[in-house]
Length: 296
Image (cartoon, rainbow, N blue to C red; front, side):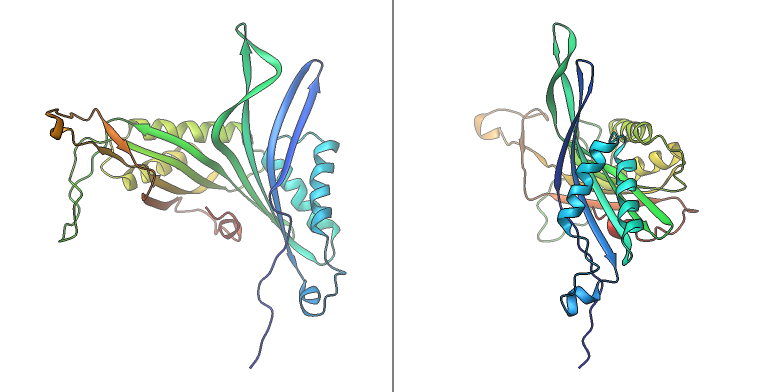
């Protein structure tokens, strides 16, 4: 029976990195979670315990901290590209690196109508994300958003689905539609992209499309959001979504002699429908390792 080592990688996961950049009395806060994963000729450490090709995960962590000190973090895509290139270029046996970054946004607290210089509040669970893969002289960038919670109180229907002896769901032509958007979009030919502007405008396109698309299913809304992004953003080759259906069930008030005209709902956190899909530009390049590295 033959046995051999299959694909493998190693790295440092979920390094918490907070920076404070001071411009006079005004402080600028960045709150990141950074993960690395390195690949290459690592058979010796697995088969014999020879660690001569293993850049310690502690060193990877320290590199993240040092890079954040030596140069302003800037856009998370650029920070991840710098780290990935460093790991590949300085380690002989390392041929590929994946660097993932999540950013938690902080808003300045308003005091007497003006933003405070050094006090902040968290806007919630939404996070900006990127995953960069560096291999030889190539790089792939997949950015996105996690936890973008949206809800519309009308403009959504669901009917015409198959029914059998186990079906209890009642058709509706007016329901609450709510989800927490996880989206990943793959950039193509990304030289010169203004990462922050691109992210901001993609996010706004997602919000506007969710709000204005009359929905007959969450699947239809998913496609509409993806199509709108691809039409508006030529730098995006494809976009993937994972959309949990945050169900709001109409409460039966008839036992109390009350009618409920889509006014009182029970918000259920689980179980929930999970709608996932990809919208891709027909002429897009093959993604290489980008999608396998940027799992939703």
